[in-house]
Image (tube, rainbow, N blue to C red; front, side):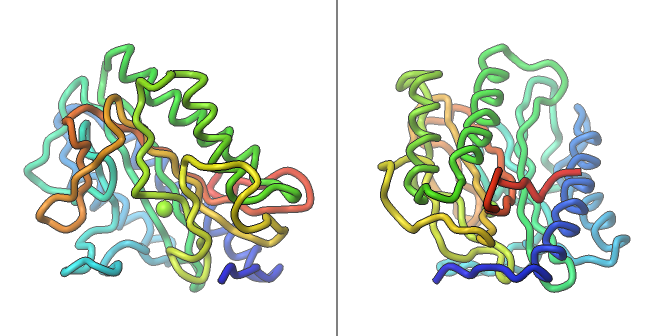
Amino acid sequence: MIIIKTPQEIEILREGGRRLATVLYKVRDMIAPGVTTKDLDAYAEKLIREMGDEPAFLNYQPEGANIPFPATLCVSVNDEVVHGIPSPKRVLKEGDIISIDLGIKHKGLFTDMALTTGVGEISSGDQKLIDTTEKALKVGIEAARVGNRIGDISSSIERFVRSRAGNKYGIVEVLAGHGVGREIHEDPFIPNFGKAGTGAKIVPGMVIALEPMLNHGTKHVTLDEDDYTFHTADGKRSAHFEHTILITDGDPEILTKI
Ligand code: MG
């Protein structure tokens, strides 16, 4: 069931989204060669707790996982797609690309955001993958309008990626955007590919997280033995961007912004 948020909930989500974006951009600014993924996680948790909020992913146990997620931040490097577990042994190096994904709980309500960036200098091919993924998110957000259906978001993302990169990029299919707010994952499920005109109607008061994941090669991914980290099946690199947005009568409103 899709939960329509009340005006009071929307106010809280707006403030939560602003706080989340503030933290995520500060964590991004810390990314550099020599920094460990655990350093980023510790910094994210410190910033969230200083604001009086709670990390949403820490101890979250999705269906099918044997252990709760052990960290605040998901950190996915190079061929890791999403849900990478931070480690003091994982040291970032020049030329890596890194996705950071963070959720917070502010006054009982959840927002979710992710971005991908380079560590120092990166290749032009990696930069193009990152730029295309970020633009795909923008295109998806543009389609999140009253009068459209969820499938219009999915299909507009897919068509954009194909127009930009043909079949060169794999669009990850097993992971998708989702409703968010009272829980970290709510209905609807929002794939990054699909048919226009299908799925639930988009109505004002819906709060959804859109999150395209694009791979340099195959769309197929594998799940590690840690139960969380998804890798590309062919070892090629992957990028991921996410915003939490509010459906309004007019333009969609990005909640995870400063
Ligand atoms: Mg998400």
